[in-house]
Image (cartoon, rainbow, N blue to C red):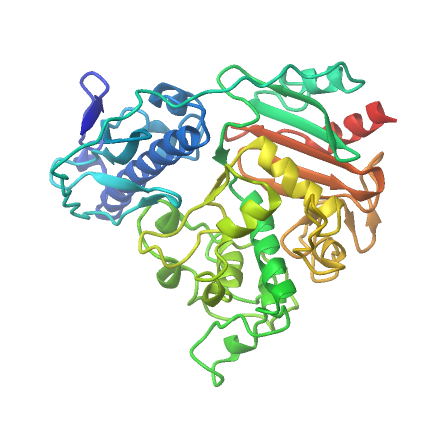
Length: 464
């Protein structure tokens, strides 16, 4: 077993604000923030490094600190990078894979831990979890490093200048682009990446995972294993009015359930080590289902939870393989029972472009096999339910739309265009009438934003 231990010189584990200057609640919140920050760091290090190595590329802890762990939400951003950590590797025939990552956050508590489950990504375990490691009697030989590969340079294209501008702040001051790719007529026509990243470097999709979730559900509908007008299984039975909430309504963020914060922040699930069943399923009903839009991670989690019975025979990895998304990993909560498909997917720019291609081809994969129902593209991109306020974007069933029921406010973008959007600048844009897919990956810092609408407009104009 190899252990890599990193710690900032003199890093203090105690809460930085003097206890005498804080109320009891402030001390409690500060302590909880440290626990969440440690879970965030453990999971990001584990997932970023292990998914890259599984894809035949490589990431370092320094790279993860620079990209995934910089510019995150307050107050975690102020404390996360100085937390001591160790990466534990296991010798195997195919390499010294990441086994787990520990992050120390308090002298009196066990480190936060994220464990790599080969093929299933990493799972962050509850605060205080005691991990008992069993050391095998024999460790086989292993190759010292993953086998890399060379990505060819992008061809000369009318979009070269537009893609260059994606990296220089033109589409958002302070935005940080890692990769972009444009496909048209079934072929890649232009791409570009920043140093340390390639089209085959996995990054967390954040809420692009919600559009992946809609695709997983679409595949279940096509197989006859699900129906979007069926109950999402919320509540405690038929006498509970939440039982009336349908899969369609949770896909459209219209469950009518209460959200304590915008987006129904799920930090206790993402970084705290709680489960989907604990955190996402039990919110109260405050509106008639289907009448009010409220963007909520918990609705997508409920949609996927509704088809959990199909995953033993048809896990998301099966769908990814059919699409050709071979370097995409859907992670679960720590119990391994529920996929966190509101955010916790690691995928590459190349794979996400193939996801967009699936929708251009109306649910057919490259060999002509249908895996989504006919009309599923129109279903997910139809803003027919209640819509978000204060934005020109519309919302369909797990995908954002450039048009709203009252019309399209985005000049230069066709009405049929729709997009997957995720935190820190993850985008997959699908434009059926132009046979175009645009993927942009990034690690934008809090307070910055990449203007994907302007970028899409300019890419389409260059392709004319």
